[in-house]
Image (tube, rainbow, N blue to C red; front, side, top):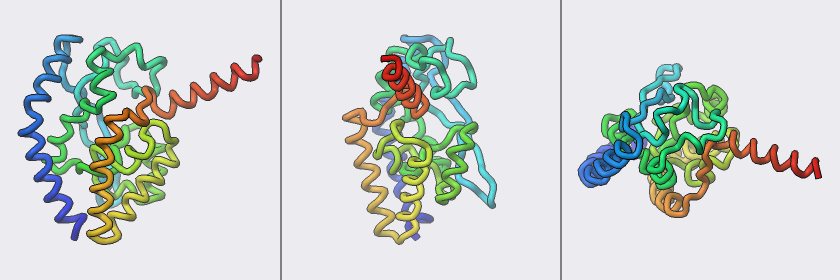
Length: 222
């Protein structure tokens, strides 16, 4: 009941209000992006959607562009060597504050996404999709924010991230009260995560791994 009807109703109401209320801020961000690095305002990328009839589906996600036009195409941020060098001045700010995710409210409005749910994996992240499959996390709509987002974001490894997404799905399937309580916790917890900048690491877990390996090499060389 909650997952099928109430959650969709909440998504529709929140996204409708957000489109109106955030129209001006989104316009300001769009102008700032254009001035900082001329080119497309939006960045589009193929992402994994909800599994239907046993098959993984895909959709084109929208984000405000935060990378320079000179950035290598079709290369995920976590696979770039020193991703910081490709981020624009405006991009650094909107990524840290998650303002780059705002265009996704239109995906929520059109029912491709939900406000809360597992973050949509990259089309090439077979490892994350496979781990989520073990926990049933591919069976729900991806979200703008989620349980894993407020519990580590980029700082957690894929198996842990998938487990957290699975915990979210379990709560969602445990009745309307637990489902609503989990969504509310994720929604309001997101504001705290954004304000503190918790878990934001350019390059994600791959960058964290590089840092750990570099630190280990330094310790060995001493």
